Image (cartoon, rainbow over all chains, first blue to last red; front, side, top):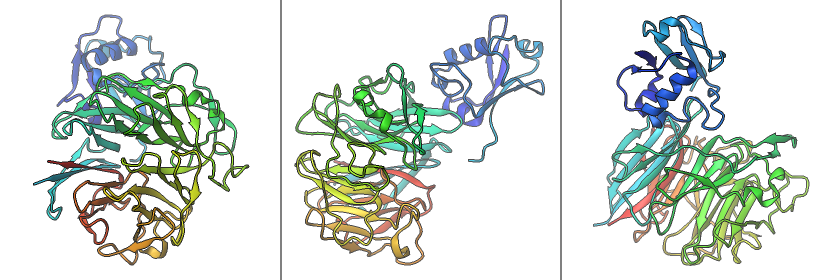
Length: 98
Length: 371
C-alpha cells in the first residue's frame, strides 16, 4: 500500500482523518499515484494539479525520503521506499504565509 | 414569524448568521471551510435551502460547495472551469498583452427559476453556467469572445467578473460587470453580448469615454424596475434608466464618490445605498467615519446614516459584494467590513448595530428572508 500525507486543508476537503493508503499498480509514478488518489477522492481533482494540463499547482510540493520530487517527471518511478509503503509521499503546501 | 439568514464569506471561512424578524438577537455558525477564502455564498431564490459557496485558496485552487439544508451540511461539487477554446490575451496593468488564466470564482448567481442552474463570474473574467447543481460548468464564451477582450485589464483586485444580475422580467436578459472592462448585457440568454458603458468617464484609461476599460465596482437593480440600474464605479456613482444603454452621474453631495458597494431598498426602488470610501489609494472611510449614504431620490441627494456606526478612528473597507438587503418591512440592510464586522440595520438604515465584530475580513454578504 502506498502512503500519502495530505495537507490539512485537503484532508478536511476529502473528509479524511489520517493519511491516505492506496493500492497503485507498478510502476508507481507521481502520475499513477495522483490518478488513483483522484479516483478515490474526486473532490481533490483540481486542488493538487490542474484539471486540464495536469501540472502541479505552483504552491504545492511533493517530498519523499528527504528528497524534493516536485520537479521530477510525473512519469518517473517513485523511490522504492514509497512504492513499498515504507515511506510516505508528502504533499505539502509551500511556505507562503496566509 | 419571518426569519433572516445572512451568508458571510470571509478571508478564512464562511459564517451563517440567523435571527428572527426582529433582527436583534443573532446566532452565528462557522467557520465553514475554515482557513479558505470564501468569496461568495448565495442561496437559490426558489429553494432557500439550496446554497452555493465559492471556496478558494492560493495553494489548492477553486472548490465549489453546495448545501441542501440551508448551509448546515455541504458537499463539494464541480470545480473545473475551463475556458472555451484558446482564451487569448487581455491587457496587463502596464498595457502589455497577458494570457487569460483562471484564478477563482468571485460571484455565484443562482437562477431565479431553477435551483439546479447557477452562474459563476470568474477571474480572469468570464461567465460560466451550471445546469446540474454545480457539478459541471460551461463557459458562456460569447462574452469573452465579444471582441473587446484584448482591451480588458485587471483592477487592483484582479480581472474579475464580480456582478451578475438576472432580469426577472426577461429570462433572455443578463447584466454582468467586470473590473476593469465595464458592464455588458445579453438579450439572448448569453449567446451574444454588448458593452453598455455609454456615459461612463474614467481618467484611468487613455480614452476616458472608451467603449470598454472602465473599472465598474458594482451594479444593482430593483426587481420591479429592471430598466433602471445603479452603479458604483471606481470613481462616480451612476444611474441608467434604459437598461444600461446610457448612464448619467448621480454622485451629487457624497463626500467622495469612490466606493465599492451599491444596493437598492427592498420596497422603494428610488432608495439606494452606498458606502463612500476615501480614494483608490486610501481604502477607508473619509474622515475615519464609517457612514452609509442613502438617497431617496435615486441619486444626487444623499443623507449620511451614522447611528450605531463608528464615527472616529475607523479604517476599514467595505468590498463590492459585501452589502445585502432583506425584504422584511422595514427592510434590513447589511454590510461587512475588512475589519471583520457585519453591521445590520433593521430599519432601512436609520440605525445600525454589529451582528459580529471580529470575523476575518469580510468579502461578501448575502441575506435570505425566510418564512
